[in-house]
Image (cartoon, rainbow, N blue to C red; front, top):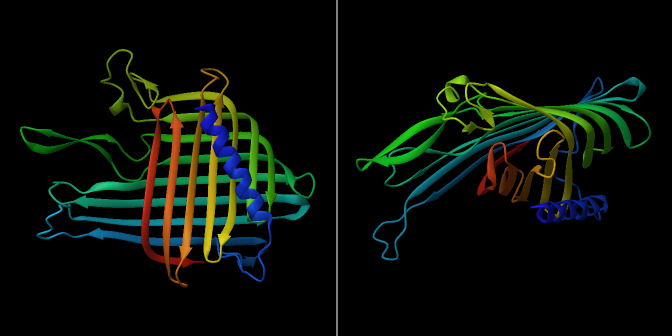
Length: 304
């Protein structure tokens, strides 16, 4: 697992070098560079609607009809004040559903809301003292699907704010415009919060998102590294990398929790784009295996 994390960090470093290279007469079309600025606030972002569909009839090779719809927003509100004060905020929301023929239920294709906020004070051109806040949860109930007596059944296993993950810390913030930033926090804390409805009936020794029977939270102290790198791979193709690494000082310090989200956007025209999302996550408080999510679709994009 550690070698895999080192590989990801090397990939992010290469992307950062690509982001630093100027393109000949090319405008960077990422989360919009020609932002509106009023009273030292910058507001910019991207809204996307993606749709995938497959239909088969009398197709001898076989196949299943399917339909997937995805909606996502990625908005930034950044403030630059007097005395070198910088306050950067980001909201990410993604929700989607999918349906396969023969299934009794629509199932989630994506469900995520995340808020990031960094308040910092400039030390020099790029470096700042910083305090950061991160919040993650889901919007819709999550279900475990199974068959009983030949019928499709489902059991609710999660909901909004269960789990909810809050992470905050103090450290240093490195920023190069809107194209790249890193936050290093040697002093950080993380809490996982859940509803007691899901922990009160656990078996002895069993845990729910790392929370023990009858409890509603688990808190740890450690260090974190997070960042964002935007780069232009070629004309009309951009890549946005976001990552977060956390080490728990108090328990299993050799375990490194990480999350990496890469969004490759192929712009067809001003309104239509194709997107490939690769999302990797490892956190043994949630599940002791690597979580992998990949989405690809064509849809409507709105830059603001």
